Image (cartoon, rainbow, N blue to C red):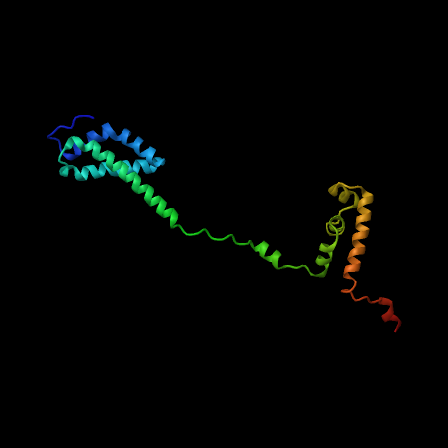
Length: 181
């Protein structure tokens, strides 16, 4: 440590200690805290505390020990505050469903959607690709990785399944019956 002149005031003495001990104290705080900005704050607080207590120090040569204790105690205090803050932090808000998810959850789709969901997977895929997305048989076959003949068969069975499922819901009216009456 650089010798502090006996006649110097607190500002000169702490400035000399700062020039001599800052790096050492910063390393100590950095190891204790593992946060560079917090370590710098603790060391600065220790030097400010030393300056404030300079006149009360009986042994001015013990100032380095005072700094070391101040840095260690400051690091402990920071760690305790951080743990207390972590223990008492509010619980994160629950994930809220997006507007789209809420609408889709409430939507049941009616009898057509229910009939589509009741179809086997491949038939449902082909019916949707062919008649909802209006793809050609070749485009649907390419999208599903099957042959055109398979698309024709799935589409035929899918439409027949939809007719069976929706028949009770449909009122079958023959348009020619009304004209004949």
